[in-house]
Length: 354
Image (cartoon, rainbow, N blue to C red; front, side, top):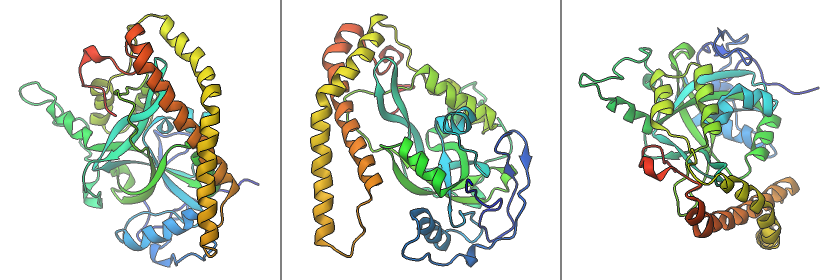
């Protein structure tokens, strides 16, 4: 039988309404609302990572912050996982509760290298300051107020380069591990979100995924298909009006105005590159695994090496090698021949984040 999270998530005060896992546009009340954060104690030594994170977060967050109960994780999605086509349809995950929220002090970037000409960049978030969301920082309930200045400019949209809107999903440990397996190159980070007004404006302690900056010597833009998933998800969850305008007007998709053969050349070349770089990736993975094994032997009391984690790390190492070779080839050969497969340089810097 598949495990599921409680309908309520741990909070010191009564919980606000959460949105239905199937119908994001229709809020619903949670069934069990009286679970206190101060009832969460330190987990045992053999507890899962999410249990330890939840306990640590509950002790350090504000007293009214929503945190995950044992056995569950609150995952803040901002990219294609905001779209239920991806979260429910592709990944097959049905969160027990979902909270539209904003992460302040971060920017949405597209620094995850993909395939030139086809899917240049995928989304991540990057910290830009020390801003911490609180219940007083909840998203204003005034929709598109003050979006257009008296002079007709849209300068107020610039604030969305300093905050990221998305959805906080309550998922089980098992579902969270699956998400991590499918997002292998990302790192996890505990963050504090500000809930939307219809979620009571309560702060939410969550885990999100960040991608370390990789120098591919060019700026990456999202494909039209990928950015479309973000835009559609924002509409689906009725995220902040200004954020939706930001995604539609400021963030630009990559639209290749190049030789139509370029995507085909890239798609055909990558499998060949994968074969060529496989030995290098295997060597790097073996070296890193050996270093971890040696470290564990030097420290017998430390954590044991998990085979699944080791396999995931090996995949990441191989992917990183392939990425470096692919974009190196793009910059040295494909771009001079076919034009950039990463961004629309003639459009300036408006949408090239990452």
